[in-house]
Image (cartoon, rainbow, N blue to C red; front, top):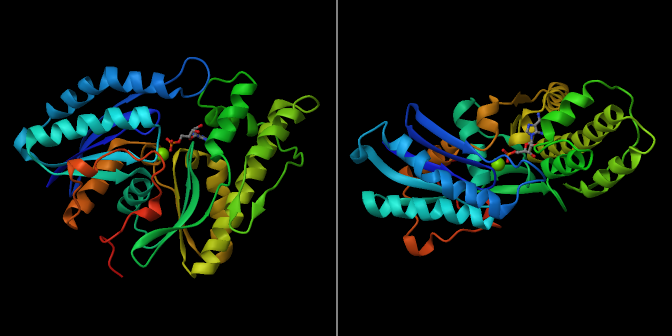
Length: 324
Ligand code: AMP
Ligand code: MG
């Protein structure tokens, strides 16, 4: 069974062909803004300019009749980007006469990692640009146990980085600067129950720069924000009684958050896993793979219900491919 999947929620236009045993081929065309952050219209223009090439490249790797379904990222994400991808997916589905499958991007992040690791029932810390959530499966859905009350951790770091003149995406640059310091400056630590917030720390970090070095501010930003995320992940492990923690999303590439989660899990006797970076950041393979397991469990998206959903929450999806 071969499924073609297309990801395109924000910055990475990426399409992939997946079969049960692995990935056949992935083609990506990432959008990198020269100045500022991700502008939805510019990103969508980039997607529109490159989707033809991406799909043609992919289709040259197999015979068209081998494709059993077309999966696409239906949300959450930037509306203009999602619409380009959905339009291409609908056209392919109609042309090849195969089912269409709308995939929730957050769930795809989780499923590809369950595929690539041996974890079966983890608590997931999903941290990317726009999203920051702690999730776990229970009774037919991925439940959101905790989440950001304002912006995602990636956006907070990227916005701070832009304010000091670092080019988007700021995450990797802030990580490198943070590695040069171990001088901690107090920053607002905001955890409310199982939820957290990052806008205060972003403002405090910008203000601290008037009297502290950039390296110290980057270090303190990361230490504070990551400690908040690890605290909530630990409480989620405790409250669910689960013993596996999984890190997902682009910010998960950061070595310091991996180290902090590893320490927390060791202290609790839990298993921790962070997959390879290419499966943590947005990629077409995660959409194709999730489309495949959805198709196998009988899920298809009729064209009439294939509209994009920029605010698509993972707990809206009935997860009938996991049996308890
Ligand atoms: P995603 O949308 O899941 O691909 O994640 C994108 C986000 O990951 C952006 O906000 C990046 O700045 C962030 N990111 C990528 N690499 C790192 C890193 N090494 N440390 C922190 N954030 C990162
Ligand atoms: Mg993502």
